[in-house]
Length: 347
Image (cartoon, rainbow, N blue to C red; front, side):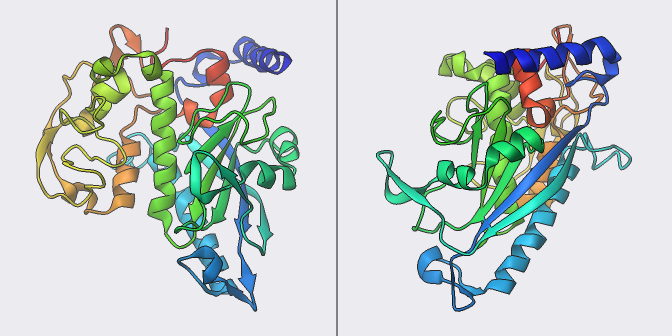
């Protein structure tokens, strides 16, 4: 309880000392996200051991360099994605700013643990990894908000694309297990990447985390599935319902662009009328024909384009008389948003 009260006290002191444009989730808010990068390379004779990874092997230096290069591409994509309508407003500043505070490397296999809900293969043991790196120090003393874990998958280990721990619980693309990560007075999120793949798959992890926290802020978990299509985010912005398919061409989600007809339908050339570039909560935004040519059929470009259409800083949008927040607050400052019970709209 004292941890929650401490966060509430911090938020109250910020409110007393700041102007309205400084409040998290409003106006020109931008958020610093310190990142700790952790890498696991199972090495044998200077080579990443494909017998352990299942799908990638080769010189350690080559794969290590790939993780460095892709980490930079992830940061570039996420920051670009947080620029509201950045594709038409080149001067728009990002709402998220990522900084790698340090990188830790282990030349050994990922720790794993057997669990009932992951019979085969074994699950990555996130708790052991976090304890080994003294995650309390990084989160509480260094202010780290995200851990980017580089590893592997294939059929060798199970993983969560995102996993969260903190005083307000686990809101992530995981099983929401309260015991699979150490819990402290500040929230942190672990993203698990596969170095056999590239920046698109890594950014997709973040896409699903965005979807998770926005659905949480929009109370979807407390809404009957038959009414999901009425929710502000999943129904009116995404254009979906409990089927996860696009039931009316809104803005789409990670797997389904507005014209999508199936999962991962990023290359579908079919054009549909969508208001994605002028989305308004009441549905009055200007619609235009949208197909995969808008993002060149490229999944990473789709992710960045989609993120740039999320209500960001100074979005000027109104829903039933209430202004919409800068939705990036739920990624950039989850603890303050949770402690103040932020919703997608402001009071």
